[in-house]
Length: 111
Image (cartoon, rainbow, N blue to C red; front, side, top):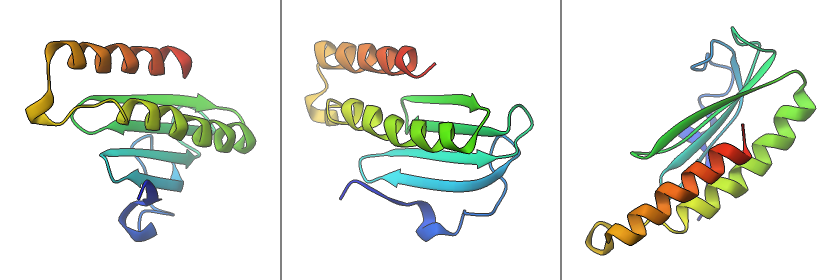
């Protein structure tokens, strides 16, 4: 299924975690969410994203164009991490280490 509107789009126009108005908000069926806000407390535009139970990351931007471009790119990066997260019964130390490394690479790529 992939990415769909979070909460059927009901979050759009509401206040996000950075204090801004949510303009885009999507959730992945494998357990991730990415949100674009306008007018938050730190910057004109912000993106928060997370993989449930694994990580949370926030970035800040000066323009809507930057925010939208990075929103789409970050979804692709999250897809890459989600693809290697093992199921509970298949979680070997090597696979868990690979996920941790992929998350670190994601955060470094999207600083």
